[in-house]
Image 1 (cartoon, rainbow, N blue to C red):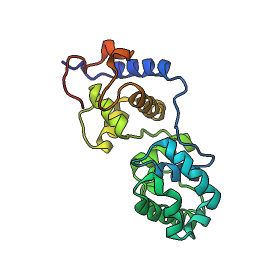
Image 2: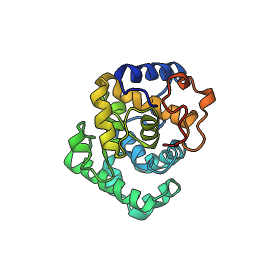
Image 3: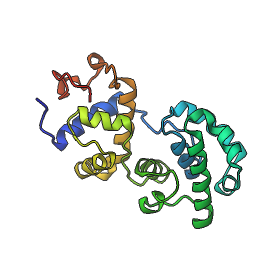
Length: 216
């Protein structure tokens, strides 16, 4: 039976994960908020490692929103082809660059409301940018975060936005950004989708998944 969903339980798990991953941070390489926004858009259905390889060449060719806004679609597609879904991503990147250049004078906006109306930007991407580029608390829910919060019994929601809302009601804002990092690191290293390495996991003694046969 799953443990009762209490904030203390969640903080206990987060403290364990913080000891396990003391250097947990965003794995995307960036120097400016704009670069992080571009990298996060490209990271959909692609590994951070591959995105980091691709963005080096992309930023050399188009270092800022103004230059990318004027790029030819085919050229951007060729530069980002290896990230998958490159046609749609290229269209979104040029559209996003145009919006940032024209509407925000080349500066990435710093509110959720302004970010999510940019082409290719959803709440996950916006939270990544807010939390990491601007230090504004944001809980990004990707596939790892969704899987782990369900396995740990913190939420049974399927929709990422509902998971975000539920977790943000429980956790203080100061924990939001780092919670995403910790869960993503744990999801990649031990609490994997197909074969979670439970016997190596320090959360094992308090994990509600023990004894269950589901693979949420």
